Image (cartoon, rainbow, N blue to C red; front, side, top):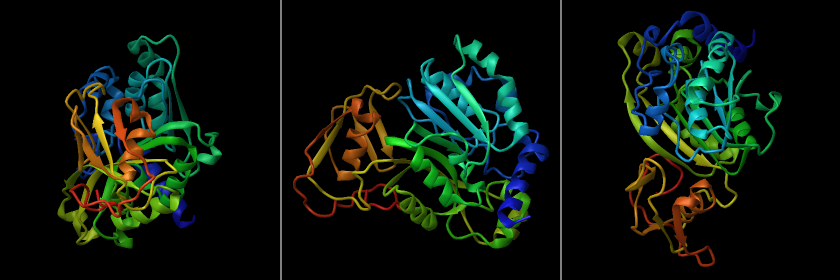
Length: 344
């Protein structure tokens, strides 16, 4: 068995046979501990218990403004996030869950009828596909057919992350969003950790070094990405003996498929104001850790941020002034993420 296939088979065995519920996890890396937004929490209250008991995510990668969207969940497991998004996207939305573990998907499929009934839907708006997240081209997901791609602590498990992000870029529509939570490392983890089935299954062996992640994203076509949250991950000494001195964080990241984005933040004299009309965000909206837009308060923005606010579904919530006819140089450093490709 080739190395990548061996890794996939180890992950499939770990999540399909060894883990029976989140209580069986040996670290906190793959635990659903991030507080959910109110509308997400409300939807979670309608999710069947068996689905919730087998949640292995490290965040809550569910952004707002989902009504009517086509959403793809990579590594959907038993379907927790698929069903939450199903509720938030409404009857006219469509949610696709992809996972390579039959045991997980059987739980998701088994609850499809009961979840639709709880939501009051006359027909299902979800579908589940068995397959590898690296091979979206083989699963019938067409180019430019998806509005939003989410993933919850799964991409780290993939042996070919470049192929995952390239596939995401391919299936997203122009202006579409990637919004995912995952485990990152401050250095490349040792080969021994990558090949250890438990350490890998616990989302640490395949954790992405943030520098490599930046390079892979750029190669895939995502020239700018934004972190919305970062939290330290604690691990026990037994795992530490395999991972060495590496430090791990759980991060939620958003990126957009936009032809107008540049690989650095440039100043075009633009400004933006939030109108306060995103549900659950009456007073402010955080695009990322460095951009909090308060209702009615104009703020200077770089060209990339202006594009993210005016050329995506978020355009209904923002007014953006100015254009790119005149360039004023590099955009000034004013906080924001520490590890991203741009200055803001």
